Image (tube, rainbow, N blue to C red; front, side):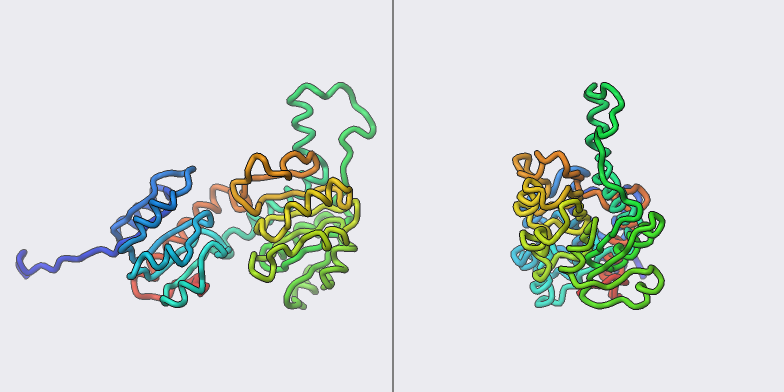
Length: 329
C-alpha cells in the first residue's frame, strides 16, 4: 500500500470533564481525540459541557456533572458515559437507555477507603475531635477539666447500618474491632453476612430506636430521597449520632438541624450534602456538634488514581466495541 492508498484512521472523540492524572490522560490521548476541561478544582461550566459534548463518542465525567436529558440529547453519536464514582444518580439513566448509551461506574475499588473515612467520621463526631483541635489552636485550652469536651463512647455501642452493601459490610468489619453491637436494614436480607459479621437484620424503625450510631450507606434514588426526615429522626435516641457518607439527599438537612437543636439526637457527621458545595449560609454549618467534610469518602491518593484508571478503561472498552466491565445500565 503506497502513501496515497494508506488508510486514514480517524480517532473517536471523547470529553473529560476534569483534568485527570497525566498517565491517564496519555492513555486516553493515545486512543482518542480528547477534549478536557483542564482544571483540577473548578467544575466544568454547563455552557462548556453542552457545547463540547457535541459530536463526542464518549464522556468521562464526575458526580458533580448533571448529565441530564438536555446534555445527552445534545449529541447524536454518544455511545458511553463513564462516571468517576460508584453512584450514578447524576446521570439521567432513562434518557441514556432511550438512546442505548452505555453507563459505567467505578465500584469496589473505593470500598475500603470509604469505610475508613466513615469510621473515622464516627470517631471524630463522637469524641468531638474537630472541636477539640480548634480549642487548642485558638488558645482556649486553659486547664484539664473532668467534663471538658466529653463525648460519646464508640466501643460497645450499637451501630445501625442502613444499606449493607460492600461499604456497609466493610464498616461492620471495622466495628467488630470496637466490640460494637451490629444491626442493619437493607432492601434484602444478607444471611451470609449475618453469619460472618454477627450482624442482625432489623426493620428500619427498630434500628433507629435501638442504635447509638446510625450510618447511612444506601444509594440515592427516588425511594431513598429524604429517607431520614423528621419522623425517623424522632425515633432515634437523644444520645445517638447520625453518620452519612452516601449521598446528601437521603437526609433532610432542615429536619436534621431541627432534631439537633431540639436535642432529639446528639450530633451528626456528614461527608455529603443535598447541595454540593454546601452554601455557606446553610443552617447545618453553625451547629457545633455536626462534623462536616467536603465529600472526601474515597479521597486517598491510591484510590482516586485507581478510580481514574478504571473509568478510563471503561471508556476504552466501550469505544472499542466491547462490553465494559462495570456496565450499570
